[in-house]
Structure formats: C-alpha cells, structure tokens
Figure 1: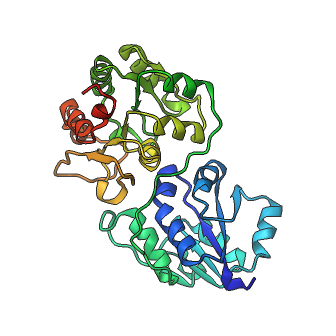
Figure 2: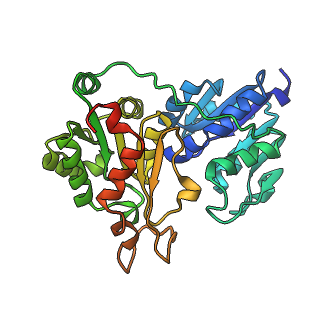
Length: 330
C-alpha cells in the first residue's frame, strides 16, 4: 500500500466535537474506499465511533511508546488534524505524514502543510469546518445525510429495565462547561413532572460530577438517576431507546442526536449555529440576549439567556418532534 493510501485523522478530545466530526470521517471513507484510515483519540470516543466503520485502525490517547512508534513508521500520505491545539499538530508532524492539514493558529502553522483559516465561531457549523479540512485534501463535502450512529452494546440491567416499561424520557441537567450552559434545575424538574404525568418515566443522566443534580431531579419527579453509572456505549443505547432526550448544550445532546433519538437541546451562552447537535430528530431551544453568544462559562450579570427559556418552549419542541405521539401519550 502506497503512503497516499494511508490517512491519519486526529480526532477531537470532546464527545460533542467528535460526533460533529462524523460527516468528515464518513466523507473520507466514501472518497477513499481503498485507503487505510487510522484514527487517534480518546479510547471511549474511538469505541463509540467505531460503529460507523469509517476507520480501519485506532490508537487511544495518551499514546504510549509502542503506539507512537507505529504512527511514525506508518508512512501516512495525509494527516487531518481536527483539534486546534499545538500538541495535536505536533503529533501529526511527528508521524511524518506528507500532507498535514489542520486549522491555522495557536503557533502551529509551521507544523502543517496546509493551515486552513477559520471564520468567526458560528459562521459555519463545526461539522462544516471539519469538512473544509477534507476539502483542502481533495475530499469533497458530498452532501450525504449523516445516518444514525450504530450503537453496538451488550444488554445491561438498566436498559433491560427501562425498555421493559411503558416508555421513558432522558433528562440531562448538567454541563461540565459551566453554569452558562445549564438550564435551571427547577425547570428540568417542572418539565420532568409534566412528562411523568403523561406516563413517561424520568431518567436523569450525566457524568459522575452531575450526580447531585441528577439525584435531586430523579427524587423530585419519581424517576431514577443513572449519573456516573454508565459508559458511553451504554448511555448511547439508553438515549436511542428514549421517547425523548432533553439536554443542555452538552455531550449528552450530541450523543442523543447522533443515536437518532428525538432530542431537544437548550442553549445558553454558546452558538447553536456553530455547535447544534447533528441528527434527524433534533430541536434547539434558544432565546439569545443582546450579549449572546458570549461563550462565557460564567456570567457576572445573570443568566438571562437561560432564564428566557421557559418550560413551555421546551415542551412545544418536544411536541414538534412528535415524541409523545409515538408513545401514544400526547
């Protein structure tokens, strides 16, 4: 195999960003059907994305000595560097790839053979920015729809219990980014109680750091919390089977959208034009203020951008998706 038939893709480190990279990965697979595509990224994200069959080999971060040596001897023709960090461009440079394509900036242009300039955040959706990297390497953005992410997960007790019931809604009240992404917990509680009255069991989900909020939400709605109790594949399976998923602008929203679940994402300080979840059944609810999007993690003047989003607006988005009608409980 010639080096031009070997492609390296350095994936983003974050769940949402990696899922927004799926259009590029799938375009590479379609555009280079005979190429050997190698992906580098966090282990959990590699396992999740493997269902697309878009890459042939994977190396998990952090790279050990053996993996680093394997990458240096692979003779890559092209490396696509999706994170904007200096370290990711340095990894691509060390791989010896002939062409190294990534975003300009962060003192790394000299490490790249093609440094692609980006516009302001939100001028293009992040998935489209990633596709622009592919276009710089001769891979066209072919306009194919992104299919639901195949979720290959062994059955587990929580999923068996949930799918044996009448239906459930996943509510995700957390966001590691900061308070400027977190819709008030009291609004999640109000929405959860409404969904419970309609016959849906409320399942509060998130990471271990969100356990307290998820426990409070579950207690207030008569549901249960699975925060910190599932891995990514298990959480994807739970989302895929849900009547609806309501989440802040977080990895959970991207995971649910990618899994094909009816998904409502509440946005605060960030830009839905830039990072709205991808998926066939996604709705964004955002009520921006004059200072939006500011991309701040915290706000000194209050969180009006989140306070402006009422429960009624989220409920209407759920109804637009037809999620409750599919469950026969509208």
